[in-house]
Image (cartoon, rainbow, N blue to C red; front, side):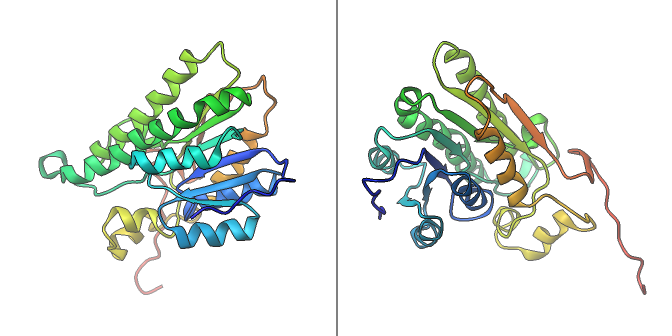
Length: 259
């Protein structure tokens, strides 16, 4: 279902995928506050319709892994696209390769890699025509592998490769290609989805970490990158909480038993 744009609306247009929760929803709010009319794209129609009503935006139901729905999104956006935030995706499972659930891997590559590529390809003509910008939300998981992370690290590294290749391919075109690479971000759904609803495993990811990043922290970065002058390109921004010095180095503080 699509909320129609009014004829008098002259705001620049931002498309945010995966806008139904977490970083996507927070980015949609931040961009709307910055003057964009935001097209909120995600599979959960009820959530994006509520969000679109809240921020005076547009809701378009879209599963980025479905070519027909991506085409419908591009048709709904039309020639008006100044910014694309490729946020749809996520992680599934954290098993070693020897025990890997390859259906999880296929799902991660379909959404994080093929979905981002499909939406970008579909909207690119409009983005170039409007001297626009694409922002990929990747992850520090793209920096290197960790135990149990082969599928997700591989998917995010592949998404990073899309951004890097496009920056080279489009160097003579008036479009900017940026990447925001978050570290530990605590949202209501990311870890819970990764561990198939196992709340204890999801909570363990952030255990002892006083201040992991929030979705709003990354949304602030999205809005800042989007607001740079047209001649300024932020190739990659890595954002971590202070407690996370590296992917393998996280400061955790636990209270002693009995205290």
